[in-house]
Image (cartoon, rainbow, N blue to C red; front, side, top):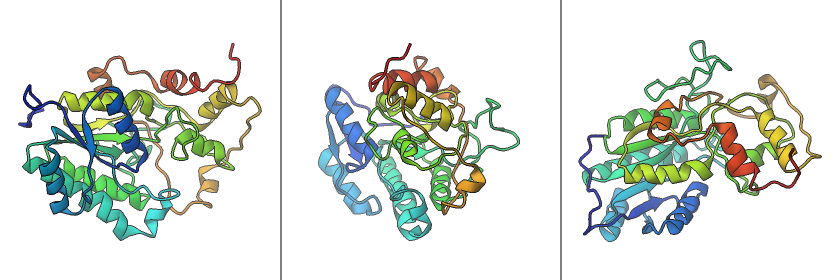
Length: 301
């Protein structure tokens, strides 16, 4: 989209430099590159250390840089409320430094960001089907994590070499992974029940690799089209995985009593991504195809 990249050619084949080796998405990206025979290496530099990033680029000579590093907090984003400097260092200073170094070298940076920077409002009511678009201004800063992410997204708009992917409530077919949204809510004592946009990694991570190959930049709502609620997911879990599974709901007000920072609930408009990738499945279709069918343990008529 207008950035003069150092595109791969016959004398410089595709090579990815990936940050976030120890993270969930970073690990999955390495496996995807292996399966597609795409040469890649994990960066060893600290994102906030410009010289270490420049050394990585000089050593490895990538055609694209992919950032799946950052701080989400352990066990959840409430951690960021009491570790604000560490959160800024990773999510703001680190990401901006990497984007700036990549721009200097004429490289596209694919940055896995978040869509948890919006919440339903009067113009985008819950259940209306009206989602937030890429150009909309974030309206949710209820958590410090989301505040830093909204801040850095706004600044990255000025970097024409960056492809920002707004991930939400990521889900994968690995139901044993504690970062998986499905795994999380099956282990909660109680859950809210609100429709949300979500990201099925098994379908969308290969698309992100294709986006890098196409040298796409700008902001992208990186979710499957449509929304799905907590209860709808747990009903699928019961029907496909564990017929004896039960759960209890509680309200947002009750949830607020057991968390430090409010959580984002929203629908993102996936029209832009669907135009680029018409094969993209709706969230409920993708859940069945990529998550529940491969893990099915019950008979579903």
